[in-house]
Image 1 (cartoon, rainbow, N blue to C red):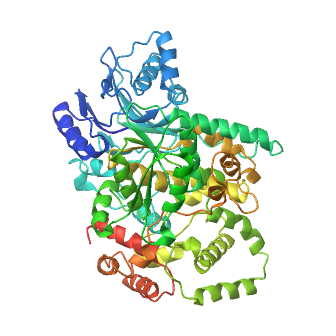
Image 2: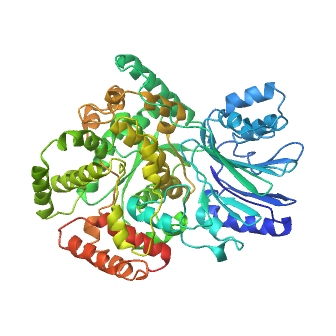
Image 3: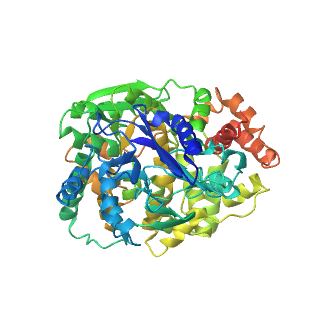
Length: 623
């Protein structure tokens, strides 16, 4: 796990110090060492977090003939099998690292390189990765990102110069790029509609993200980008063989966990007390003693520490728990610097604190990320299934019910414990989907509200709607899952986990995102995911064998901050000052004032919308 960067098309005397500056900005991703290689027209940089081949796995890695250089971020879980095969074919390895297998796969294909070579290389890799290979003979740069988007890759093509980095802030500091950076209107609109900026957009027009499951070739000052993997078609597995499906699911998940236990440094697991992380911890425990880590809150409606303690006691793990004592006001600027662009998921602060605590004990932590998107674990997935019945109620009655819930005061606390909050969210979702069946994602600001809040912006191509259109032929909940897997998961959940864990030099691994398991789950019939409005059916059946019944029956509980209460108390003044000071040439101040009035009067919970505005202000330097 590391930070990578590079510059192509610049003389070595300028490229090397430019890469050194980017490496410095990525130091938190790799506290164990720095490496730079440079030559005619290129320089590559690497910051290392030593996990495998601690003593000998430094990068950049260079081929024996000195012509091919590699920098890689992530882990290749099948590297031992690949190494055996490559050695039998004559490859001579210089290290015991997993990343060197990528270099040799490229070198093996290099002599007969054709249009299919990148796919052949990438199809062999199992893991999470972002890498760049520079071939000095052909002047070719070959870059790729893993299938699900666990590892980041940002790039810019400024004139004749191509540059890339693991984090946006490192790339944005390049002297050749930074003076010309301009805000991207499409990215801005997406941020307020969805709470994050989907790939390939960034907040800057001049910098882009490489999409998950894509590779990039840079040759002769031209960029070519291609997809090398996609989600399989749905519904190919027969649901009449539940026991067989369960055994296959258990085997795939167990193997995914085992692959992710390979490490030469201390390893543990995040444990929230929910089903997903508990199953991962239980499967880890079968392989030996486990260290688990959880974060609690003084506000009982947001606190999951008791459930985490129940699981830890049942599994007899070495459990570490802390209650969050956080100054969000102090954290925001630090998080804004790491993200490099506005990012609206407030639970990033939780992951920051959890990662900070975990890193004091281990260097690698397994997580339960991805299970909800694979197996219909969010409330909105069940709501999508139920909305078909809801829409059969006469519209007059529905409108009356919606008006009734809007009239009721909203009390602070976790939304999952509030009938009023859940009812309002359901009504909003049902109404949105009735008017626009492609509006599948959660929207803090509707398209209309975004246009009103940001009147100076022109219309944009909605990337989330495009993803929904791609899977239009799927069953409605399946369509929603696939949109989540290709947008919300890589651009929100995995961004949050990667940046906040790597801010502390902690590597997070996600067994549910093993691509073989993902492909299996995509083919499952819906009743193996969502049964009678209860999600993650197959995972619950698996969990019954290894976890307490109380954890299996426990309702979904998001890992969230008590923002609704904080924005009425401790955070009110700084957040209000910052949001009401936003650029009036871009924002409609009256809309922001209305949000505050309704939130403070308990007429609505606008905490997510206000947080989006506040985090924007941090990026913009307002407050």
